[in-house]
Length: 168
Image (cartoon, rainbow, N blue to C red; front, side, top):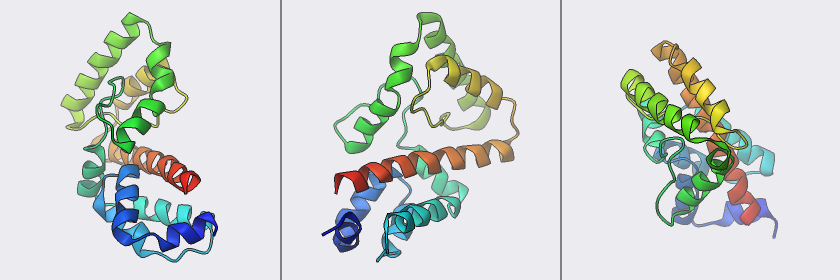
């Protein structure tokens, strides 16, 4: 039985649990699960991308609720927390104290400006790179930033979904 067959055959409750670890927005998980059966891996990923792009802003905020501040270690033993620690691992080891302090300040400024955590696809990025992006994005208007955040959430969900598929 191939990966796609296993994915298609998972009980809905179990699949939605796996999907919610990828993106904490129930609308996203529900839409991906409801799209079964899928013909192949590419169809699953395309459905996940479409589900991400269809999220309302309130759904995106639900997705953000499961993400720690960038530079902070995700707590807990959940699959999502473990993935977050892996995704931020390069940044965690690459920063000096000055950069870490500047990133904490940028997080606070961002949250005060936009009302939610700064979200970035952090895999493979250093804290200096993340800090530069955070400072740049502070200049965005609300609509522009919402579009960026929505796409960053989509990219993270896709990466995590690929991990789920690889583990099946």
